[in-house]
Image (cartoon, rainbow over all chains, first blue to last red; front, side, top):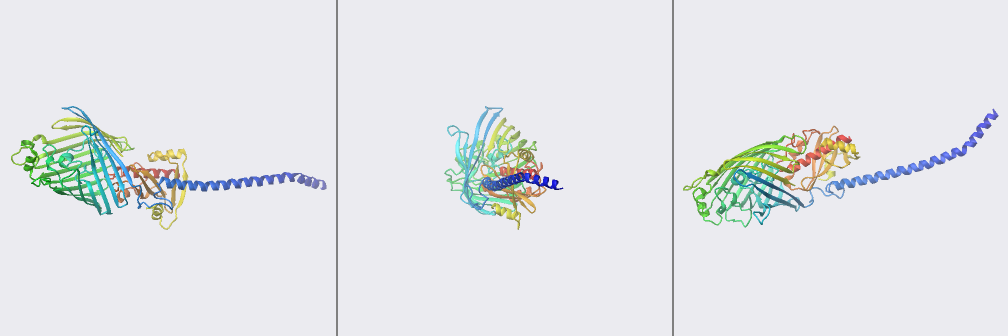
Length: 405
Length: 145
């Protein structure tokens, strides 16, 4: 028994240094572990700070942190954008042409949340050294009061029809804008003026007082198209009033109408009142695009304008004029960002529905045009359109390339 | 609207917990595939409230950024969409009734301007940007939940 006890005590004594050594080792390892945990905690805090910084940077410092600016405060003031289109035309009877139809740079500035400036500077036909021109398509100051009532002034896009205010190549189907929204409703039509606009429930409205048109540039083929003054040393002896209302029964669909009335004589001895009215509908849903418009107009003192412009016989301007069109397309690519939209458009217009006594109508100005084509958008901001136009005068192939940013 | 104001509106009388996730390559690829939106951020931050999760997304509309808050229910449906900042012209700002089309939608083919979401007349880039942000947030929510 004594021997067994002695052996146990001896073994314990021999093991003591090892035990002490293990304890010391464990303490060191524990300490190292505690340091690592502290370092991890510190790293977690640093990561948290970094993620908050990243979050702030990602949201542009507009909406985050204690030093944030509220979105109702002025953000970056300058806004830029642009759009443009190139087109190749190949008529059956005539020479093919290619044109940089327009390159447009948009610039806007938010002075504050209530006062905004918007403008578009347009270069048409590539170069002013050849057939091109440079013009301000619009340049307007908006004074935002409340959604139902706001004030606008400057060189204004006339709120008539669909294309005049939304004319980017990605927003309409064919390679050419509808001729109805070119010679019956002059597009792009801008005038110097001022007015009010706003939204009331599902209705939106705009009404302006502007400079009237200039009858010295009316003709039989293009009607009142060239009479737009575009804010270029515009005659202001005769003014005009334009009003528009749209009803939005649901998103993506609108029904609307507009009326315009204004003198075009300017310094002449006659008024030359131009009256124009149109109704329109536009709808996009589940890949289907539908659009229709009917427009009618008249020009007072048409005989005097003919005399002023030296027009005789069937060259007379239309005493009344009008037209309509309908178009439809369907995006056959229902998934992804690309779209491929076959479309068809039919339009009928006449710039001389009636002419003054003593003049004749030219049947060439009574036009019917079918357009069949396809629009391909690799991304929603670019489009390639190929179409075939069948008209009484001539048929032609068109290829267009457009972009917006 | 600031982020705090948006969160207060989404989760009244509650203090949502900020949560941070770091996506691995597989999760990022899965979110990109599910959403159909091309993005590369692997850091996801969300705010967990009593009945949903608020995600913030900043993206380009035309040339300028927009920040939106999208609140997602635990089962992956859109519960709320708020625009916190918008620097493009006011004409491109979407109306509340357009945003409301996104409510109660989950991530499927119908969540598209070609399907159930009607486009914004004259502001297609805004509509596309917000739909893309919504698809991206729903895909991220699915990947990390």
